[in-house]
Length: 163
Image (cartoon, rainbow, N blue to C red; front, top):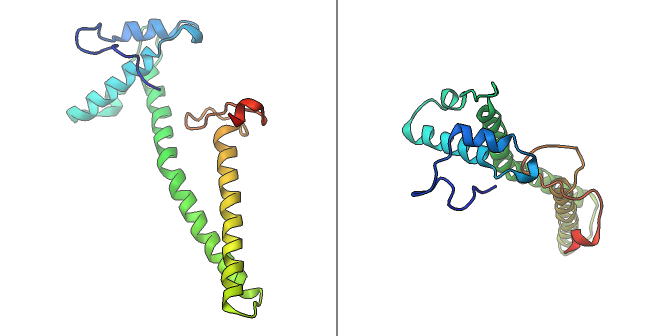
């Protein structure tokens, strides 16, 4: 999600807590994501100044809610998922590769080239399945999740999905 071009930049109106809350209370179709921009700005300002992020984000809005703390939780979850997902894939791939090589040796091939070929086929199959599962998790609403990393745009394969 990007903040609207020009919003909060020099010469433009600064995003205040009141503007962010006013925008947040609008129907979702009319929102300009000012709450996101306000909380993100608050977060990066606190981080760059060396302030306590927890206290900076715990500001209560006029409606009594703590919207920036909710934003921080979602933002942290998103960033954690972005960085841990590749690590998990690397780990699973390394373990699967070791298991597949062991299985290939146990298949009892007559020559080394046959063993290497069988190992390559097994690894290709594992990579193909791994890619398919990753695409399913990212693009399909399988878990009914609100995790921002997941796009959840499709419930089934349609012509739009392929384009």
